[in-house]
Image 1 (tube, rainbow, N blue to C red):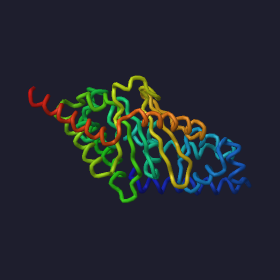
Image 2 (spheres, one colour):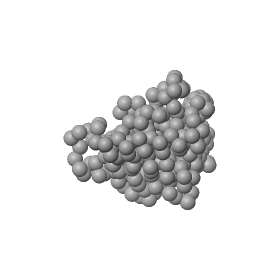
Image 3 (cartoon, rainbow, N blue to C red):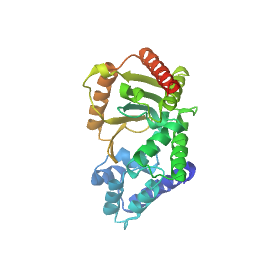
Image 4 (tube, one colour):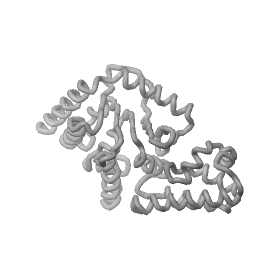
Length: 277
């Protein structure tokens, strides 16, 4: 489903939610209290600013006695086979974010990946993947990264563990190309990148991929990922804790200038390695 049609579908979800809520004689605050979110959240759902998680849609159906319509709509809208179900909502939220901060302990973040890197990662997790499915992954990830080219692009800040730049994903030549791409984005001032050196030892959020997102008209959210699963957090107390841990990571990382120098040096190391094999 194209982005425009998906947005239109979420707007229909919001309009239908408002209609059903008003028919039930409930305010946004009253419905929010019944489904364990704020009234402001209900307003954001109705305006299609924020997309409700599946469990919230199910509770809305229960409270408004709508025979599962919101659950069915939600399942249909988040069932985008280009992305894992647990990550589809994050992709939607990225489009509205004013700021995105990530920590990548093992892999280059998806928004910064080039096609060769995406191919290598896809084949590593599924060596029997078809060319069609690989190309679909590449296309969807490159399309997703277009938000960094938009005039209204979000502020994008990422912390990469040094392992990310040292491991030759896709081979040494391919990894050099990937690091060149990141360095160029930094030089163009489209992204801010720091590297957490191996010498830093133990660090907050150890081994956990984390993404923080801020919005103009909605509270911030955090996303953490594990093996074939993810967790989108919007509880203010939890998001604040993740933000605190992320701040500690940034403090332990190299400066942006030193990080760029390390990335460029690592790219040269990979290039030398490729030329000798």
